[in-house]
Image 1 (tube, protein in one colour):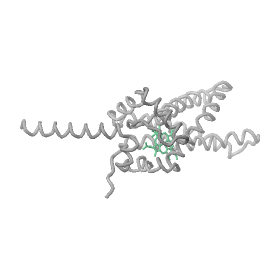
Image 2 (image 1 turned 45 degrees about the vertical axis):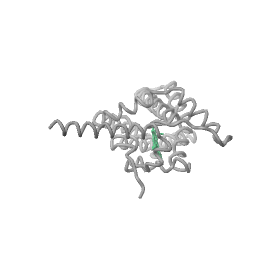
Image 3 (image 1 turned 90 degrees about the vertical axis):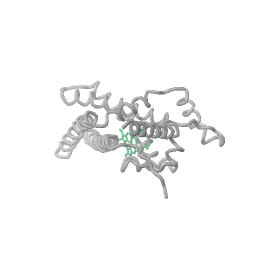
Image 4 (image 1 turned 135 degrees about the vertical axis):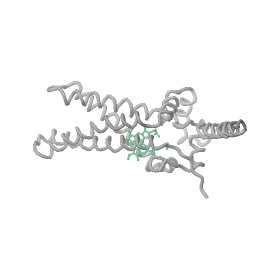
Length: 222
Ligand code: HEM
């Protein structure tokens, strides 16, 4: 029988999936608007895309904020701590991953809950989403916002290949696609998790032992 571990709590899954759906729908409606602008077509279809883009934009700002405020605060802090802890091991991880396709005996350092590539993607996704939100609001509220429109389009063009890379790793790449269940029911194969996130798995095992000690201490005090 396969053993599984909980990789993402319901708060984390809701956050990811709300951002995922809205971000992709914003990309599709945004590209549609560019098509209508380039082909100089005006009409109901363009108007519909503009309204849909605004609705998904508002949802992308409001729903994650609600999930953040009412979600599992401990897990946000833990994730932020892991992402901000970027050191030599992460640099070694990047170098060894770059060399892996060319050299067979490369030693890839163990990763925490997120490896260096994931930490980079989290930072890119967060910073680009915030800048798209800010420039999006300015474009919506201002008559001629050339610079914000330029930044809004530029950030979209830059983040799209990174998103394509993320989707490739999640859905196609043989070694990593097993983890896709983490955004559905939160569970992943324990062996897969130990191979990809050994530091995180060791930390969780230590925390479980400590919890058991605490529980038995409390029992013996009663
Ligand atoms: C079809 C689209 C997408 C799929 C299938 C997908 C899938 C996944 C999966 C499976 C994970 C967890 C990986 C693990 O267990 O380590 C993940 C994590 C994550 N996703 Fe997505 N995702 C998609 C779109 C997006 C979008 C649009 C964003 C944000 C703009 C996003 C941001 C993130 C972030 C920040 C993480 C945590 C870091 C990481 O694990 O890479 N994802 N995604």
